Amino acid sequence: MTFTIRELHLPETIGAGPIDDGDAEHFLAYVAVRNAVEADVVGTHLLTPSAAELLPEFRSNPTRRRTHFTAAVDGAVVGRAMVTTRPHTPGAGAYIMVDVLPDFRRRGIGTSLLHRVETAAHTDGEHVLKVSVAHTVTTPGERIAAPTGFGDLPASDPGAAFLLGHGYALEQVTRISVLDTAGLADRLTGLLAAARLVAGQDHRLHAWVGPTPSDWVEDIAELRTRMSTDAPMAGLQALPDPWNATRVEDHDRRLESAGQTALTTAVEHLPSGQLVGFSEIFVPSGRTAATQEDTLVLREHRGHRLGMLLKATTALDLLREAPHVEAVVTWNAEENRSMLDVNEAMGYRAIGYEGGWQKRRD
Image 1 (tube, one colour):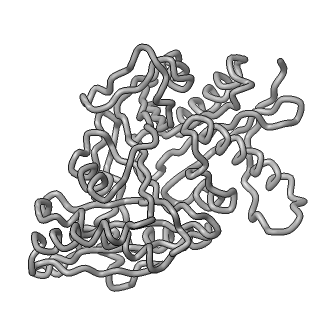
Image 2: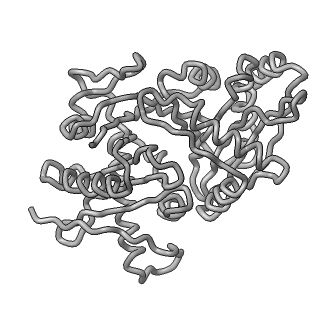
């Protein structure tokens, strides 16, 4: 089989009318491969974003450099690859992703795409390569255990076999969970009451829809920075990822340009006047599934049920602001038992798993 690999240059826009931009058509095919592979592995289209949602996220920006490639057979895109590096924090490692449609695997396409993104990462000065990818969970046979002691994956899963064959090692297993919104308000009533009691009088909630209020931009920047150091990363190389007010504002603008609305709840520690935790849900335009994104309580302020208080409050805001949403999807490291306890109490159930893989390339 003959295939061609080329770098993808992202289009400026993807409009609602007929598309005559070759880059836009190419990007739509790229996204179609991404979504088809993920739906095939996880068995649901809940995680299927539109090309318009992905375009702002897949662009390079001041803190992320992204390079994309496609593989085509007879002019049809059958594979895609992406590499992401952090120019502001060299040495943090590169995140890569390779997807090939099932009917075109074992023909050298994935290996060729992997070589392209590994070379691009090396050119950017990164020698630690990281992959986060969904895996099948029902495949029988040998399992690969995460070195954290939490979670495992089937060795025969196509993605696992591919990564093992190219020198990657499993470092972490992440649970993909879904929360059904039907009956959610009733389920949260008791959980919220109990959390408020433990949180006590020293904590006050603040909630907003859309961009971060100017009064809290600096505090949110600090909380996002702490996400890069306080969230469980197992053996994956991680360096602090600093945020400032400008980066928060840029992030908020990109989210809006993707047609997504952020619902955010933050908790203020009244004695210090600082935000010490936050939780956010992103609601895509035109879809019935939202995503529970970052939730963080600073380590020094844990033990007060603030995680439950934040997540349950944000979920209730979702019911009010986006009543059309039927489900919320989230991702949590299997070793993050405290957050999984919160999720399970709220009604989240596992629908799949992701592997966090890593390779060091000299």
